[in-house]
Length: 300
Image: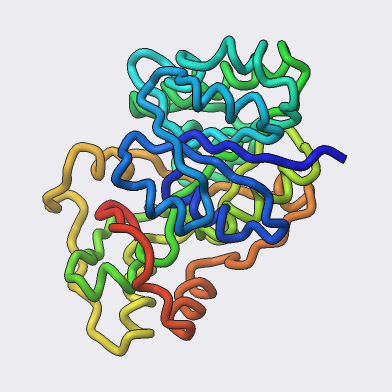
């Protein structure tokens, strides 16, 4: 049996969670644009490589040995940076390749007025970044058809975990309780992203999968629950209409939907953190909620 070798384009927060869950000690390589992050990747169990939008000899050598490819790089105005740089190499110079995983976003569904969506629902992307995501998904699926390799599209909701959560935001004073009537978001703990990736890669499963928790909830409720665990007063509620927000932060609130996750469950995955309460309680009890990288100011 061929040894599984993983290569991750865009070895950030979720990729490091994936590497930490590497029970088989499979070789994992991953890219970053910044060489100063190499030591951080090594500490997570990832052999670091630099990717600046071009295919280098070192990248080419690593790709030639790769059996499982994970892509966690956002598209830009010019398209998908990975496909633009190494698309031809993926077709012609990866003889060992068995499976491709592409990390996308539930933002591709756009706004559904709070209704439930699943993998069969229409994509109605609102933001430009989500429009580009839909196009990138289609390009990766087309590559899979062309090469005969299974491609798994993982549509992720708001990512949180150690270092990126409402507990940490409360401690550093950045937590806010923005209230927009009937607004809900799904979330996903980074360890469940890692678990879903290991399941799909381990079985070479392709398709589209919503990787998200069971319970879409108002964002202000998450902050209030975290405050209760910490024994502190939650910050005051702020009406969305009067809140001072960046254009990107405001755009998140322009999309309201409840995202179902039956497809990944049908594939055999069982969530460690099915809702934010379970996750916050466990992080608080285990004391690991401060660990990790700088957190997003946008969502809990």
